[in-house]
Image (tube, rainbow, N blue to C red):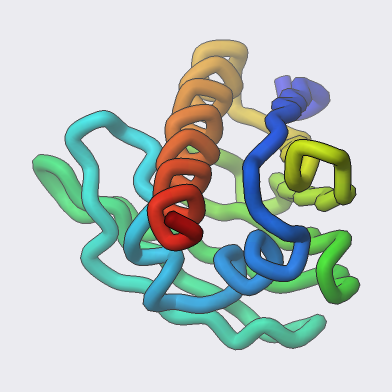
Length: 143
């Protein structure tokens, strides 16, 4: 089932610069990067350089570590990284594309390789929740 993919597109009322910074700053990640409705981020570390790693711990009942390595980083337009957790294979990859539009920034998040259709669907729900939290965070920051 590793050939499964997902893609989510959302327009967020923020600049590409603000979104790019949010995805790479551990203090900001800790405020939005929880995929479950009852999750919080209890640990976040990033070293946003190609070949370097990140670690995010999402916690509800128990801590769930998510780790990866940055593969591509293009300021204000692209972030690509591996994504490893108990619910995804170690060679799963996430790509975030940022494109300016009249209403803010169009964010396209895609992920490849999943353990099952259920895992892909769970990730789709989690990423949608993460993008919603990110949009709320940046909208409140701009107000």
